[in-house]
Length: 75
Image (cartoon, rainbow, N blue to C red):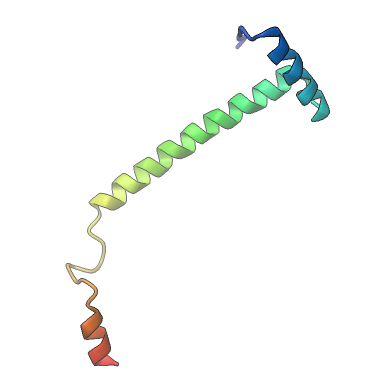
């Protein structure tokens, strides 16, 4: 997919120099950033789905809750 961006000329030139210092073209640096951004969004969605599923899970405790006093009596 081709993408056209509007960027201030000075910003583009500074970004081009920064990319060159990394051994990349500006095009490659932008591509890498977009891939990273897309991956981050995917990871955040997976984490949100995991947290939602764990919030609904009842677990294996069958209603048992930690009781510090009970723990001390058994020791």
